[in-house]
Image 1 (tube, rainbow over the protein chains, first blue to last red):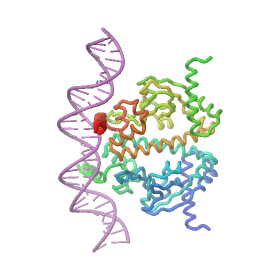
Image 2: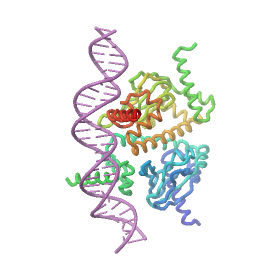
Image 3: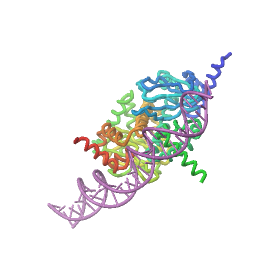
Image 4: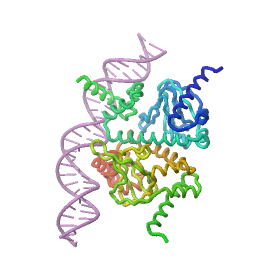
Length: 206
Length: 206
DNA sequence: CGTCTATTTGAATGTACTCAAAAGCGGTGG
DNA sequence: CCACCGCTTTTGAGTACATTCAAATAGACG
């Protein structure tokens, strides 16, 4: 007999296992061993997985919902680094690796579910589960590429172009966001985003 | 008896070995095994290690000189992603990993020397030399953190602030660059950089 | 229904770019 | 050794992109 919570937990781990096996050659039993290191956590909309000055003690895999990972600049403006939805990883990589106070906030934008692994268990996995070190090396390389691309775009493209790119490349995420969030991600004011959207509307009508 | 070239080669590998042993626990013999996978290459000022549309067949460790890694945007403007000087790594991580055509140029800004490793040899090292997978995982995580920080700054700070940050954080590199290069790194026009520098001069005099 | 938040709009402002031209500077050949 | 060439740096005027502030409007939710 399983409780409902346990059933959910099983289903979430199945998602994680599938995610891993799509990305690296790993046996069933090794994958299970890895997945068992994760704890489940539900996060209500508008509550935080991490706040500035806390030490990030987890790396997370999102199985339901949507998060924003953001930074407050010296004027108190929110700068969104990235969003994490189902099938995405999330952490403050700097704070997690060095166990130093974080500069970031991780907040749920919807009622969400995540699987969390601690630093100790992740280190254990690196040492004792074949393929895990490779999994994270390749994942980090991939996100590095994406970040590099975004860096180039943020410097060489106009706000208008970046907005078009964003909604075309991430329609699944964009739908679920307010313009406030989108503006904070693009690094522009929400008023200006509104004006960009108006211009697009007008073009559509001709 | 060694030729002069061989002696230089030995000295370069010693630099690489030291670099590695500062970053990961690795035995002398394993480190040597890894270093032996690298080939030496001298690159004259203004010549290229990689051009757009070529496949990046190497990852490099700079032992002498200075490189710029840049991208041409759709208006033909150069956007410098990063500089690599002595003790730094350099590659197009995307093109190298996937063996796909590169979007980037890698150009020597001074007469330079690099040690290069091929994709095959690097894969060999991942599989057969203990500690190498960890070395590159941690290095990639570190550069990811740096890139993330730069991303935040490029969106939340003014050109003036970014320039001050750059010359204070990287005095060693900044000295060796023309303002044209610095501007292309900061993502601003060189004319505007000149105006920023004038303002700083005037402040200094009071 | 009322409250809170998101979105839109406009006017004034600021930051950074473009274009054109002049000045500085280093190297090279006559 | 000097004159010239190419490249970097500076300067100014005009312009474009994006922000700020204030206020009105629209939506969402209890």
